[in-house]
Length: 124
Image (cartoon, rainbow, N blue to C red; front, side):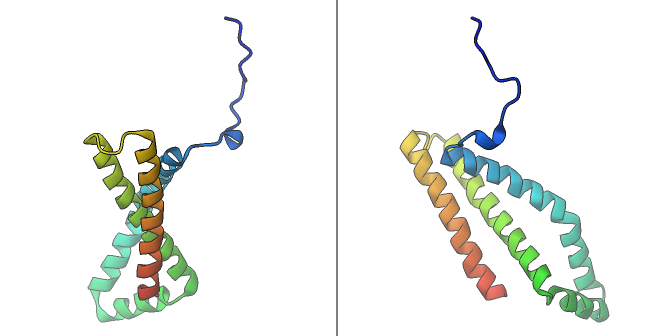
């Protein structure tokens, strides 16, 4: 029982399987959406307050860095949504086998990226 275990876990050396990677991205996207919520609510408030604040908001949203940030938030929402549907299916015992879990993980990544590109191109 005297196994030599590492004292410090090297996280950069661990190779996650695809479902684990999707799980980590699901958590990161949820955190990103949570942290962006005050900013999104402030943008909603500026859009509804008056025509002057609305035009100011449009001027800010026209900046390419802001558009890129909103594109990232769009990806976070779409990935979180698609992965959430995957986890709901897993809770209902659909796709719990290894091959199905890998396939659904690939589908989540593909669908979220394709929807981000399509909606981002339309909104840009």
